[in-house]
Image (cartoon, rainbow, N blue to C red):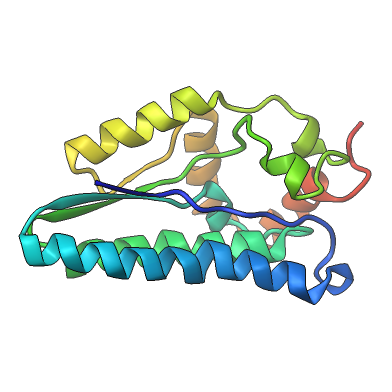
Length: 179
């Protein structure tokens, strides 16, 4: 089993972010994840068995105002996981994408988001998120959105115009939006 759970965030407006910091987010969330997936995924495919759980995010369903790089990387990971799953069909290797919402970890502190609404709001328990991902992995499911609020949010994101989603995300992630 491979649990590809790398994730780094970065708050504030893109034009105000340090280049080295946003490049580090891309390197962690995309480049590092893909390098690991390729190495271990090949070994699994050659062996004819394996299970891969990739942590994407419901953030990948919406434009991430004040988190543009993070949301963009998670959109890539969400999409990539479905493509890899199809490529590995009939090889004995399954790929599951866990797409949690805001989870109670140090992510928001590390990303500089504690002064935002999303940084201050109640978050999902990481044990519940991990359990949902593990159960989906063991069942061979392609994807799982953990938590009922996140399921509603991700469903609405599929039918809501991107411009509206970007405006909604701004209310959650704009620096100083914590009320």
